[in-house]
Length: 319
Image: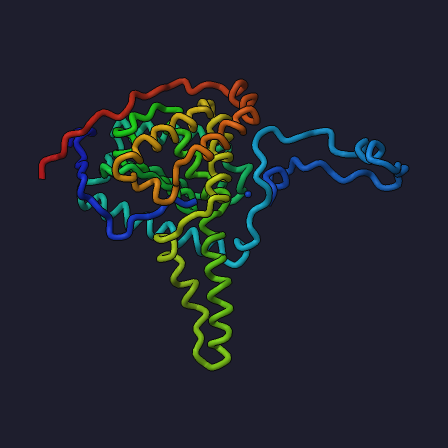
């Protein structure tokens, strides 16, 4: 089968389509936080005197604050394991339906090339990303969709590449956004909030001999299939995403073009991606307001030596 001839179907629906998922202070994680002032120095009163001892450095890029404390309610290892199992199941099902792009497919090579440029800049946001077994796959489905689940498992649907005619910068915008969800552990936060609520209920039941706290950990994989991120999570992913793409040498302003395309696509039937990534003028304005923060990063970043053509329409493979 030729690389372009994997099956692309409008009606291909997975039993459990995965949502888009998914760092400690990024500077602390990378060891760049300045040490405290030396003891024994003479203290000055007043704002001017105090400011003299403030760190001289300032982190270049976006600032989204610390991770949610709700992440502490769920084991990162268990969530990543559950996500990996769901991802493997989904890819296996796609392969059986001839809906998984072969290794030599040009658009899969494109996605993996862009991922290889972005991933090294993820470590500052989440040190766990260094140990993730990153995967990137392309699904032969016409819907406009993409995701990255805990543990660095990335997938794009062919429809989002083809129908939006995405250039490399726009692909990087999507990938940076999805990777940011994983780095900021938004899925872990959402599951943690659900777990915290359920544990309170379960503890009450346990007093009556009715509880089973273990079932929540066992059900984490299923929860990954129905998560919806908050507006705050989406804003974080937007901002971290433009920084990742800028450091990787892709134009961060492409995120604006991407959302303009998504808003245009939403005039008809809403794309699947918009069910968890609602497009709005406010979102675009937030991105535009933060572009100056990453402009210097992009200006100094080496440009990708290879560029790829936009995804062409594919003919369905013979049944």
